[in-house]
Image: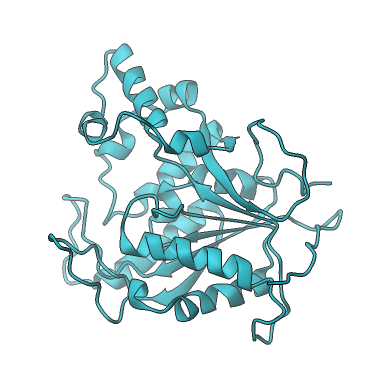
Length: 298
């Protein structure tokens, strides 16, 4: 598939970042401090949310839905989180697939995001890429970060759209656009979880990760894939405020806030990514990047 050459930003043109997520709240739990930092730097950040979270559960036991519709509540939560992070936001318009339970797991509903063909599921994102013209994209790895069908489909859709948005043969009334780089969020590596767990214990605190670590394998395969660590410790509070905006999903007394910010800043002050695809002609190196826009500035 042929692709046009990358268009580097002009001297006074803002950099643009597109983060592709499955559900409302994912933008706040994966890479939120990074997006908040780039917004503060003047980068234009757009979050594309594939589904409305319609089939999600209420995970905050203290939240009272009352007679409200969950779909509307989650839309309002997303609006609040976007304002806190300072990002632009776009719904891609698909229906949440839910998280099938059982052995074997039942198929996802026919009307859901994960049930759509890749051509149908990716079409709105291809159009959005050509309209927004991001220099960098972020999304999930091939396992979705965790095996929710919408997360896996989001990975597939993002990779497909990254390729096809640049193709002259893809039919659209918008001009092709070649995104320079695609990154995967690697937020929940075992190495990070274990480091914060041990920091809590060393400081006489209860760790929120005991049960989580018991379910993890001994070998942290994901940590070996990290290519990029963004120092964003000063934006952890913004990340947490955005998380709290998703009241249906986030318990303010739960695991998300079990490690004090001062320990997070001391022992794990970064958000971590894997550079999955790059169209930049850069020399190979084992050095860890500290900027998603490395190679695009200046």
